[in-house]
Amino acid sequence: MKEELFVSGRNIPNIDPYLNIWHWQIPSYLFLGGLAAGILFFAAVFTILGKENKMATAVKIAPMIVPFALILGLFFLFLDLKHKLYFWQLYTTIRLESPMGWGSWVLMIMTPISIIWAASYVREIFPNWDWKFRFLKNFEAWVIKNRILIAWPMAIYAVILGIYTGILLSAFNARPLWNTSILGPLFLVSGMSTGAAVVLLLSKDHKERKIMGRIDILLILIELFFIIHLFMGFKAGSEASINAANLFLGGSFTAPFFAFVVILGLIFPAILEVFELKGYKVPVIVPAALILIGGLIFRFLIVEAGQITKYLY
Amino acid sequence: MKKIKFDGSFYLNPYLGGVILGTVLLLSFYISGRGLGASGAVKSTVAATVNIIAPEHVAKSAYLSQFAGGDHQPMNNWLIFEVLGVLAGAFLSGIIFNRLKLKVEHSPKITSRRRLIFALLGGLIFGFGSQLARGCTSGAALSGMAVLSFGGYITMIAIFGTAFVAAWIFRKNWI
Image (cartoon, rainbow over all chains, first blue to last red; front, top):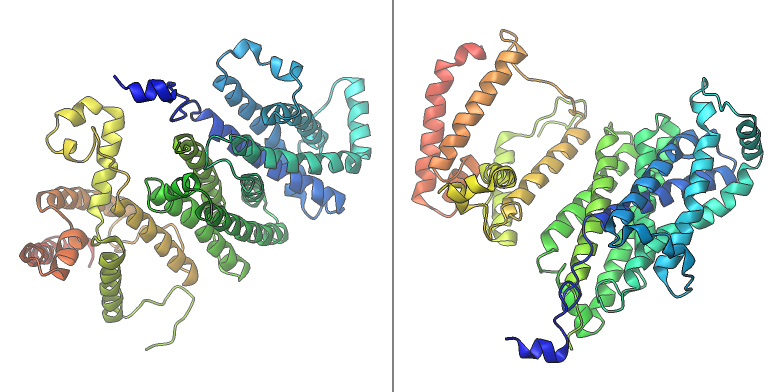
């Protein structure tokens, strides 16, 4: 018998003292959501700046992936639901204080925008494509004329989507590792960096790669700063926060976190990109793939570790 | 020291390379508390892979069950991270000295195919031997000799002595 657990109420399987409800679906979705947000943000910003043709991959080609990434991510979220057939209730229950409610609505807006954006460039990339119906052709013409009008909300919602992937976690006030407001900006920057990596991977234009490489190095530096800041914040916090941070600073997540996320996922690709900017020949697939894999592992580790952190009462 | 050229022709002086390798070994003991190794990482990867595909086999095998299955976490191992670092460092060195190319190095008298088959055979035999000897050139000989282990010296003599004989037998593949 474990009376102290019954009396204290801390024996709820899969919820308390340890959360055991989120598996591979959630970090995979967070990765795809961040990636989509990053790509769409760059596409929108370069459109607003009038650089569609100079940054053709970022504006026209990379966004083709986004609808697929978002739909796959939403499918993962769907798989995670216990009562799958009631998913629509996310949209009938309006609660301003619910981050999941906010996320559902952001995705509801972002997914169609991404489909429209990608569709409006299909004929430019595949010249033989025919939209068949008259109203589709008219709509395409309207979108092409009003791209900047679409780019503004797309940029803003991309930022919200990127932050939301972190806020989803930080809204859990019972999990010390997640319950920090820096997680939102950290996931946003990480998502933008993975988005930039996709553009780097797809781009064949040397000038565009150089610009994206520079942006990516900057994003990696900001991300490293946020990671340091995250742990400094924990270390200066309560005992529960210190215990949460210690999982990564000597505990069981230390080696995978520092090896795969910090060194191989951030510092090493940044060094490779610096060498590329300096004129050395670097196969671009290596830094880009490392950033993508590092971003995916980062989300898996944070989701996994966050579930086992707890308050100490 | 000769001038460093960045056209792919520069190789470090082997004696200087040895000193640097020794320093790396010393640092490895200092930072991780363990020596260097290579075959251990391969062994852990094999054990972890077999454990995913056929866990019953790992449980039954006296050899594999030392490393995988049960509470063992074969991939959470210093050697795995060390070998990843070796790959990353070698890649960076290849970029800096402009030597990053996908190619098979072999004597002009033999084909790439022959070279790859012999390399694979040699690697298999060496991997098997390293498990009998409880370590390879870096794990048993280098790290062993660094801590003045008698086994380290024997391993070193055995590896290089055998290599001397084997090199003469297979010399036609190179000259």
